[in-house]
Structures are given as structure tokens and as C-alpha cells.
Length: 346
Image (cartoon, rainbow, N blue to C red; front, side, top):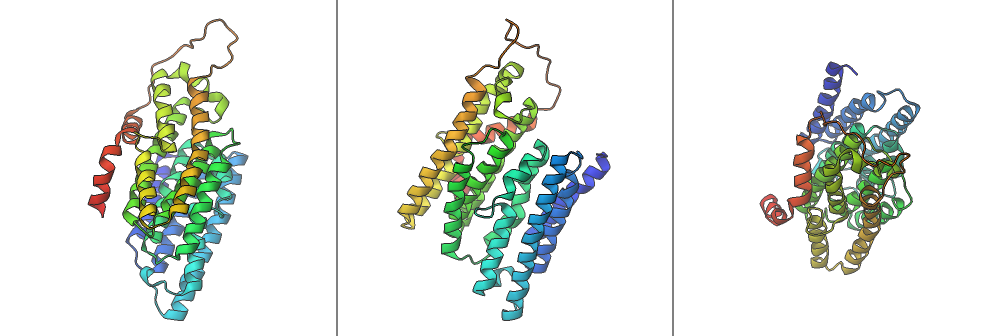
């Protein structure tokens, strides 16, 4: 794609998200979401591959459905109450439809089925945008709404369970990362009504870890578990760090990913939701299994070699790696700072 055209689409992504961030009116927020969707569609279909076209078509249909639900819910609320403000979504039917529409936007279970299929048809760069940037605008709306407690908690628990169960049987890395995204969204939504600042911290750490793992897979040019076995001979240093990033996504101490899950479980316990905290903690074990599976395939297995020499010829990496270095450091070493960050945001 022409760099000038690419920059226009990327600016459109930024513009749509910024409009949604700044808006207090439902129509303006809906407009920002639509600009966001239209800007990413050409990026998804730029390779002219049947899977890319299929993924972009599925994404367009789901996002159009979600946008219609959001517009219907906001206009219905304005018709009944006379209010267009995001904070004034008070009618029960309108708020429920709005929650379902935004859940469809971000891929929250049980409205998640489009996300693994769409992500599988994209290249890793566009998949990274889909997994991180596209979540920001809907989350900003969810944080401003008066949420229905029981519905959101139920969807969040289902999301953490499905995100763990769905990734167990996958061999494609992009589908595994999609189910990882579904599980993490469940954790964020679970604590949203009790501590919005904690949801923001969880979203921030998820973006750092996902950015790091997508860049790592892109640098190694791996899209399936089988191809991970060859990564140690291409870049040993990166391969040594990648299991730590994966375990950080799984939430093992003393890595960054442990902090948000620990604080979320602590908050749920303070709210006397001990059963929900237990179910959520057990669902994290399901996700941890497929992160360990990826780590095992990457570091403890060797690819079949037809020659007696196991070391492949390696050229110096010409691509810039500063973004991978920074995101990896953030993914591994932020744990001591997280409580003070939460305090600052609160």
C-alpha cells in the first residue's frame, strides 16, 4: 500500500478514537466508532487474499450490527428520557442493548465468535491494531456508562472461561491470541464497576504485553505452533525472552501480568464476591496452559532437520527492535510500580 494512503488510514484510526474519547453525546461517540471501523477496513483487505477479504467482510458485518445496536439504544433512550448524554443512559432496555452492542464491538463473550475468525485472516500488524487500538474507544464508553451489575459480571465470567477453554485446542497463534484477548477483556469488565482505574491499568498492561508478543511473532515470521520450534535458531536472545512474555500474559509472578490479576482478585474479595473471584482465578489456569504450551514449543523442542548441522545461518537483523525492547521491558518489570500507578490514577 502507498505510504501516503497508509498514513491517511492510520490518521483516520486516531481521529475516530479521539472523537469517541472527547464526546459526551451519543451521536458523536457513534460517529467516532464508525470512522474507526471505516479506517481499518482497507488495512484489513490490503493483501487481496481470500482470507483477508473474508475477515474484513465478517468484521464489517459484526461492527455494522454493533453500530446499529448502539444507535438504536441511544436514540431510544433519547426518545424516552430526552437525554443524549453518555452519562444519562438511564432506561433499562436502552442500557442493556447498549451494553450488548459495545460487547459485540470489543468481542466480549458470548458475542465473541467473530474475533478468532477475523484475527486469523489478518496479518500480524493489522491483528495487533485489532487486538489493542480498536478496544480503546468502546472501553472509554463503557467506563462512562451506568452499568447493569449482574449482566456485566455474568458476561465477564463467561468471557474468562471461554477465553481459556477456546484456546486449549488451537494450533494457530493468531487464534490463540484472540482467545487470550477474550479472556483479558473478561477480567477488565469484571472489575469495571468497582474500580475503573484498575480496569484502565489492566488494559494498559494488556496492550504492552500483546504489543510485545505480536512484534516477536512478526520478527520470527511465525503464525503456528509448529513454526515456533525453528525460532531459537533464528534469534536465540528473543526466543529466550519470549516465554517470559507469555507467562506474563498468563499472570505468573513476579512478572507484570500478575499485578492486575492480583489486584482484581483483591478488589472482588473486598466486594465479598468470593465465589466469582475463585471461578475467575481457576479460569486463569486454562489460559496459563496454552501459554505454557507455546513456551514449550518455542524453547524445549527442536524442528526436524535434514542435515546433521542444527544451527541455521543467521544474518544480522536489519529491522529496528527498539519498540520490541521497550514493550518487553514494560511487559516483564512493571509489577513493583503498578500499585503506585493505580493510586495515582485513582
